[in-house]
Every structure is written in C-alpha cells, then in structure tokens.
Image 1 (cartoon, rainbow, N blue to C red):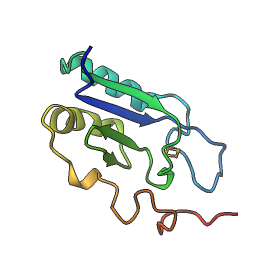
Image 2 (image 1 turned 45 degrees about the vertical axis):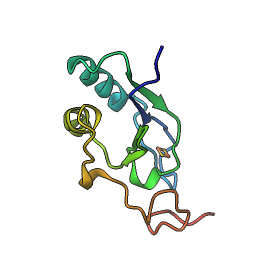
Image 3 (image 1 turned 60 degrees about the horizontal axis):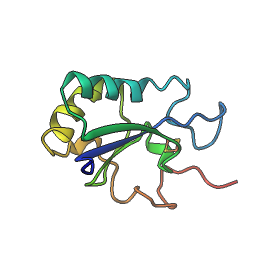
Image 4 (image 1 turned 90 degrees about the vertical axis):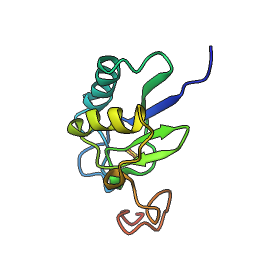
Length: 119
Ligand code: FES
C-alpha cells in the first residue's frame, strides 16, 4: 500500500484540572478527532488520508493542537468548527490556513512566552 498522502495527528491528551500546561482535550471526549474522521469520510478523502488521535505533542499552550504531515503543518487552538475548512483547504488542497498556524517563535520552543514556567 502506498504511503498516506496526508496524515493528521490530533492531540487528545487529558490532564488533571489546574495543570499549569493545560491540555488539548480536558473532557477526554476525543470530540475533535472524531470530527476529523467524520469530515474526512464525508469529503471522500479516501484511504490515503488518515486521522489519528495522539498523545501530547508538547505544544499544549496552543491547544487543541493538530499536526498534518508530510508538510508538518502545525495548527493551534483548533475547534470542531475549524474542521471542515481544514479538510477542504489543507487536506484536500494543500493550502495553509495562516490564522491557525502556531507561530514559529512558539513551535517547539521551551522559551515560548505562552509556556508556563517549570516548577
Ligand atoms: S496536551 Fe496537547 S500538545 Fe500537549
């Protein structure tokens, strides 16, 4: 089987209330992952596009977080309302939705100003 043309990882990490870094799925419902799976099926994205739930992607302060490969497009503060446009524009068309992108100065940066200080 050929490689996936697009592979989405949707953080579904749940932490205890009050954790300094927060988490992407405080309810533990996997609602965002399920919304992607549903929308991909509805859009007929086909077998070479896959959405997987993921553990913490270490961008918690920008959650809920979704990363899309092979490009490595990191989206933050993603809601279920964003899912149709992400599927239509990014997954199917390859367009980056700028307003959802996690800023370069924040991505994978332990000194990101949004990150809670380590205890
Ligand atoms: S809890 Fe989602 S990136 Fe850390």
